[in-house]
Image 1 (spheres, rainbow, N blue to C red):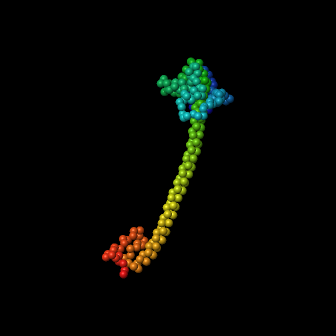
Image 2: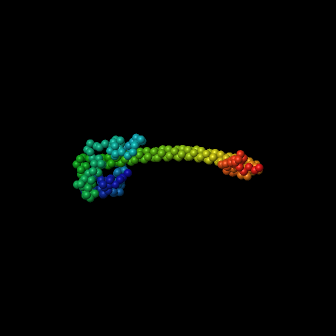
Image 3: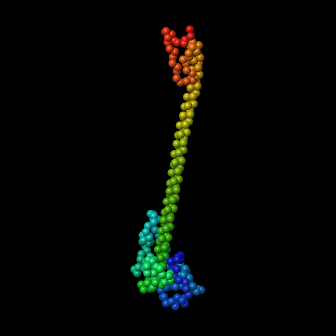
Length: 236
């Protein structure tokens, strides 16, 4: 649970050095054998805080951090020293360019002057961090659920498209089959027609020099012209 910003306030130094420094509110943690490390101390602070907050599972997209903190019932203490305020103080033009140890000492002095324990600030930081992590999981779950729902919807749409395409392919094939059958009937009839025309033409050929019967074509030849009361080309 330990994070880098903790290290600015919770140091690891021998107890004798801490005592000699005279900074009673630094809450420095001894690294001597048998004493907890800074990380262990932070872990103990974190474990002393209540369970992670809960959020409405129907979260609609990212919201402001303040809204998240409010939803998690995280409010500023009466003294006003939250981890957010500390972060702003660290960015103050008066100390932001100073060495880390100087910034740390300046903040700790300000906390001591206000009668604020460092532990309270770290607890506030842990609560906010947990709220952010929890809300992230809520959003992630919402995104995953939406993804699953949209994938299912997409699958149904694709299935419907396949069904519609299959129906249209069947209709197209039916059209092609119907056209093929009709053409086959027509070609078959035309062959019979040509045979019939040939039979007629062969019969007429015995009586005319110019056969007026068309064979194989769709247009009939013009009838033989009459001349002098007789059909032209008619054999006597």
